[in-house]
Image 1: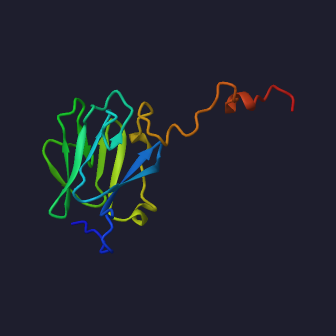
Image 2: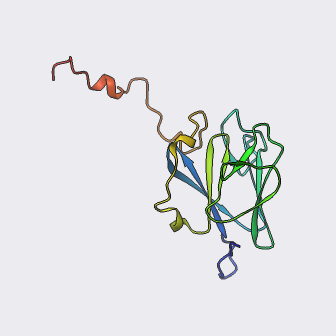
Image 3: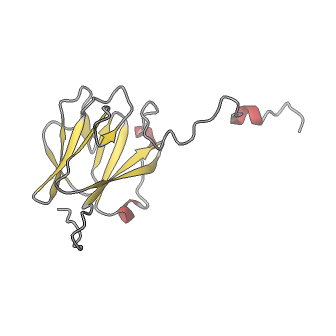
Length: 155
């Protein structure tokens, strides 16, 4: 069970979804008890994935009695939990990995827990982008490494 910290009445996260992209952890989403999170391609979702392999409403993460659960919302390409296809509602524990359309979400109860977590870069789908992926897109005028380092060109 992931417990929410005691505080002065503020709504606080009891868990976090950390997003993996391009082989590194890149984005964090707070999970608040009583506020389900729908992940999908549609703009109305709490977490939007820009991938044609992602359904408009792909999966949902929700809390019940202090525990977190995940369910696939009859998505076309499915949701994976710890590498296995998700067929029914499943409980989540810290360290669980949810895979949707090539994007990996790690459930954690503390942001500090992800330091040192390894990430298999082969899981990332280059066709899947998040807001973080779009922070810097090289211009067509920017030289790539092979253009800027031509061994036949004098220095």
